[in-house]
Image 1 (cartoon, rainbow, N blue to C red):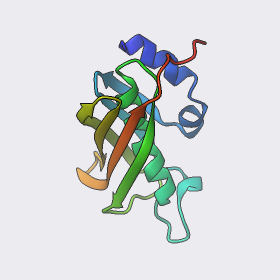
Image 2: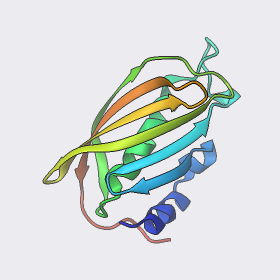
Image 3: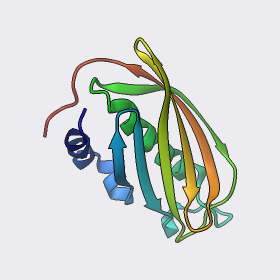
Length: 137
């Protein structure tokens, strides 16, 4: 799927757009997304809630695995939280395809804080092609 088609998918992605998660790059089996941690995204400890970190990584994973064209969804994912993020931190998630076999794929996503190069989260997602084409706007 070309970059224009992926940008059209992003235009329909209410969650990412509402949270300020931007799609920076997409290529076959790869995607880069970014967000800035907002005040409503922190937990009781003042650090970014793990759910938002997972969501950023999962979004990059989604665009990377859907870059091949057919509708593809997650069948499993795991995340490791390595360092905290704070309000105002810009985070970048880079998803890279590791392998595809039949309808299945494996993708790794690294979430970093570009300001200091710290890896905040590592995510591994397993995808499955369910077929068809994404809806058209």
